[in-house]
Length: 529
Image 1 (tube, rainbow, N blue to C red):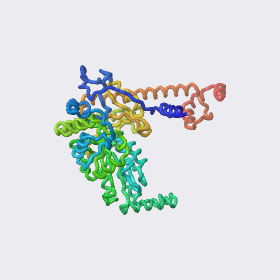
Image 2: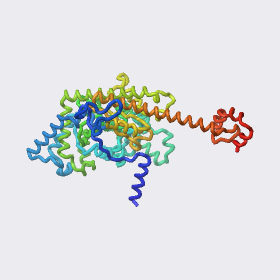
Image 3: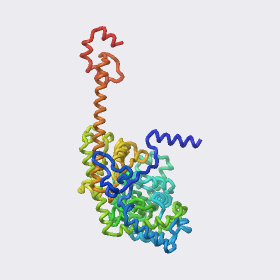
Image 4: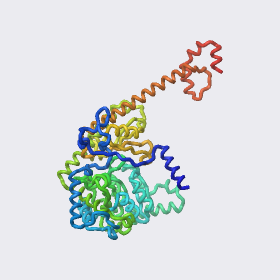
């Protein structure tokens, strides 16, 4: 029975084209690193080396995963540990048993200093950290307000939460956030009237408790959103929360900085730090599988919250601790970020490359006739960029540099990705159900070590694909028009003949009336039959 149910579910996804599978594409950060060739692709779209694709897909934003200095540092640290008899394999247990070590404690203290936090607590992954946070931190009676596009791990944690209410607000919308928060503090009459008496009384009591500081409100957002690459309007959200919930001890922001640490801040401390708001955030989540080129995560918080999670965070309590090798790789990433000259150079290259890609794609797509047609439905265009992203290319409209995540939306996302891979570029598609229907995309990630030449070739490849697709569509439309004309001439329609569609009938009549009148009477009678 179970076997059939599982197969049926997978077959449904296969039919919809949304079946997930694991794939491997050997890649390098830039074509300069490919031995024996100078470039990954040529302007005609042919790949010079199919074994290695230029990486425009991974989350290795600072290119630390392929940095020789970081690798050498890591090997030296491991060699030193081996020479002193320190264990370098598995941690052998959970943090609360035998998995804790001086290396773990040292890293947590260093992370707290680096991110200017009171304390830090290591987790095996950002997923574990988010589920632990959301399942345990909100107390009975509390309220959680969250951005509609927060990560799946946040949703999984909230499902286990004891909070009284969980309410989403429109993505990155301070206006809708204020509306939702006001409704929680003072429920509209229309809302109360739609509830039964007991539920209405409970809602009114919750609002009163929140206004009087008896319960907490948690606001959950991300620094940078992984699928759209857009940056959270954190300052505006915090201003609204401070104005409507004046008691600071009752409002708590939780910011998932998985995609903003290593990208924003003078040494990669993240968006909250760059905005100068980190001291007003209850919890920040830093993950190490993206810009840090490692794995694992750390919750940056107060010592009290750290101790609470250490006691009640089940994903931490009941998991084997991070291995020594992972701890050392995070230390090496910190070494690279704290080398001011090298870090600054990496940040500059990352943002320069990001701006070059955005501007190139904006130009490539805007010069495509299909996109310029005002009558074209945006969702039918070959490729398009979100409006917020195109605006970020103009420094006058952007308070912060854009993130290195660029979504290239297309109803033919899979075909576009395959075209780019055949030209020598590693990209991936993101399809439903990961993103909403109609929002399928090629997710582009920029890296510090991507080259200007590779970016130009990438843009040229996208532009060429759009042009070829438009030409193919125009040809099909033209062929379809010819077939319609031939059908009309072959099968003339009587003026009073019934048609399935009145609009179709009018069109046919107007095009064939002259020919109908010229027909012999016998032929007209035959046509009526």
